[in-house]
Structure formats: structure tokens, C-alpha cells
Image (cartoon, rainbow, N blue to C red; front, side, top):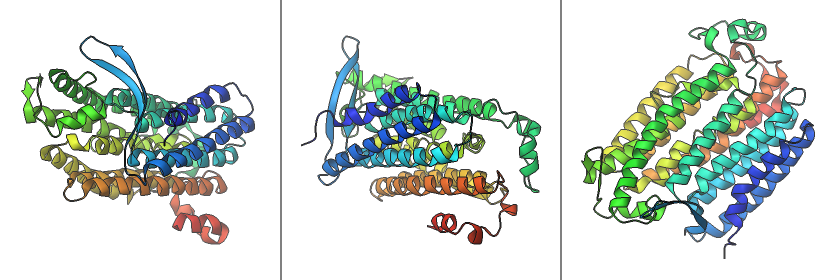
Length: 418
């Protein structure tokens, strides 16, 4: 029996923690409180997974109507199935590890006390996407994830562009070409991420509009719940939107949702914001731009998988394949350690969409989500290893100058290999 409060506690604890640690001025205390709270959330997430995953069933948590619009309504609530429960464990566990690591990594940073509350706010938003029981709440949390990412990418927003940054100029590689150095800065990177994600979110809103039109025409009281949306996969879709109806309406809805995923998961042609986002702290990149935020697009497609007709899945697979090959090719000529990992992340996200695009009969859902879980864990820890190398090397990120690390940092070398 799952306690009624469990999913709500997991969702709201990071938000409460963010408010609390925002009041603390000592970095050590802020990190300690935040890490302790996230460790508690991890314990609750493991408990939830132990109750949901073995049974293989979905559980509807508490929910409430937010907007009653007469014939239909929009609400907020929590929902957990095996996929959501496993993703919750991953988000909470990695958040705990990153906060513990960051207490050491930023021990001499003047802005260190700001990191825990911004980070916990992001975790709250990400858990909102994972545990929401309807597409409307998912979209709200989707935008809050964008806000959290915006804050963390621009964590050092006062830093100048790298063209005017003596430290960057001193440490950049001899093969450093193709970068517009006058436009590469934390402030510009956060703006670029914000704008490019809004482009994808415009498509997301079109997809929601199509599904809303179909749900209202079908007489659904709450047309955007997962339960209501699942019925569209097995029944004739009523209603029309932008002049489309029937199967064409569902294709439009699916492609609209995928547009949101393209922006958030940095797929071609909206992939260029992610490498620039490495201007933020390595610890932020480790979970936001390698493990969780960029995985939100894959998670969204997997959550709405039944709504994707074959034509839409073909588009998902093609875009994923183009992104996978393009990003991997770009990674091969990078000199910056974090840039290589960033383009590797974009490539692997493309590979997840290739898996999803294969279709349910070919095991695409299992392939895409399985790689999502594995990549989230491994790439987050790989970024932390990169942070340890950069920290030990005095800020040097040029891989041409980082030889001989196996002798100097054997533990980091072994963990990176693993």
C-alpha cells in the first residue's frame, strides 16, 4: 500500500529546501542542509520504487482541480508508474551526490551559497515533470525547469565574454577555432538557451492545443490527464485543430510534443545551446545538461508514446539519427574537455530518440528509456570526474595539455573509465 502523501512529499521537499537554504548565507551550512534534504528525498524515492516497480502498476496520487472552465478543467496531481519511479530515484540520487561534491568544488567561490537553492529549485521542477499526472502540469514544470537552468547556466553571469577573459585566453587550446569568443559568456549562454527552448516550446503548445481540442470534443472532463490521453490511442479521435482532424490531428499533436523535446533535449537544429551552457558550473552541467534536464525531452516522448503514430515516430527516429551522427562528428574535433562531453551528450540523446523512433513492436520504448536511465547515471558522474580534473589542473580544460593523469590522479582515472 502506497501512502497517499509519499509522491507529494518527494515533489515538494526540494521546493521547501530551496526556500530554506536561500535564507542561509554560509555556503557550508546551505550545502549541508540541501544535501541532507535530498538524501531524505532519495530514501523516499527508493521506497516509492520498491512499492511500484515490482508490481509493475501505476499509482494515482493526490490531485486537485486548478482551473474549472465549465465543461472541462485543468488540474494538478501526482502519478507514479515504474518509469516515473525509476526516474525519481535517479534525479534525487544524483542531486544528492552533486550537492555533496559541490560543497568541495566551490569551497572558495564567493557565490557558493547561491548554488544550493537554485539547484534544489531545479530538482523540484524536474520532479514535477516526472511525477505529474497530466500534460498541463508537465508543461508548467517544463517551463520551471527552463527557469532553473537559466539561473544555473548564468551562475557566473558577471564574467566577461571569453575574448576579454584573461584566464580563458591563457588556458585555451592551440586548436581553439570556430568559437565566436566575443559572444561566448555565461550571460549570453543563458539567453541562448532560453530563446532556443522557447522555440521548441511553441511547438509543444501547439501539440497541447491539438490534444485539448480532441479531449474537449470527446467530452473529457479533464482532457490532459494521462488516463484521458491514453484513450486517444485506442479510439477514434474527435474534434479538429488548425484545420486538421482524425489521424492528422494526432500526428500534429505528436510532432508538437516532439518539438518541445527537440528544444529541451538539444536535438538538431536546436542543439547549439547545450555546448554553450558549459559556461555554467561543472556541477550544474553534470545533472542539468547531461543527466536530467536534457533527458526531459526523451522522458516526455516516452510518457506520451502511445500518442505517436508511425509517421511521427519516423520523424523522431530521423531527427535523432541526424543529431547522433552530427554531434558525434563535432565532438571528434573539440579541444575543450567539457565541450567533448557536451557534444557526446547531444549525440547520446539522439541515439535515445533513434531507439524510441523504432516503434513499440521493435522494443523502441524499452531501448530508449533503458539508455536514458543508464546515460543519466554515467554521464553525470563523468562530468564530476571532469570537474575534478579541471580543478586539479588549475582550470585547464585543453585536452592537449592534460596528459599523464593516470599517474597523478589514479582514482579519478579509474572512476572515469568505469
